[in-house]
Image (tube, rainbow, N blue to C red; front, side, top):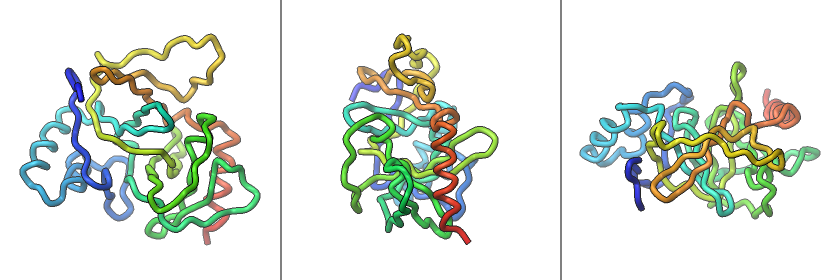
Amino acid sequence: MHTKPSQTLPMKGNLMSSKENAKIDISAEDRIRQMYNDNDEEEDMLVSQLNMDVTNQYVIFSVGEEEYGIPILAVQEIISLPNLTRIPGIPEYIPGIINLRGNIIPLYVLRSKFDLTLQELNSNTIVIIVQVGTENLKTVGLIVDAVSDVVSITEDDLRETPDFSGNIDVRFVDKIGQIGQRMVIIISLENFFTEKEISVIESAGKGQQG
């Protein structure tokens, strides 16, 4: 993979496994310690690299044939799909909810968001647990096709979103990142969901609490 001038970190199993009740402001060092908990030399090197500017770190994942990136600070953890509780009467883009250490988290299928054919969910399905929104942050599990790596993308490698002449909804697209020959769509989690989607997500999350 060509990474100049960006830097790619290798993957190992699940990208990260958060601490109990992990919060969005968990340090870069803690995140890397969680990812590489049995290789001290490798994790020390990566901690040093990330702490230079953690705001430039992105988790890269794919949906269909496209690659997307989200800030690592917004990612709580990445898991394989656990037992799923389905809720009748909600749109298909929310297949159900999961119980993650006592926290009820609604899931959202990104293939639906991007108008792609839905795939069957199973134990190999990958879920990225993130916090979305601005003031009232909401925890949501994003179902993606694959997670590839964590990369550092500098401001010099970020481009403004092209003008699609109104034919494409780009409100959740922040910028376009260039990683060597790869083009990655950087997602804005603040504007990712519509008001209707937020309402459905909140209903799904509250419906099984208590």
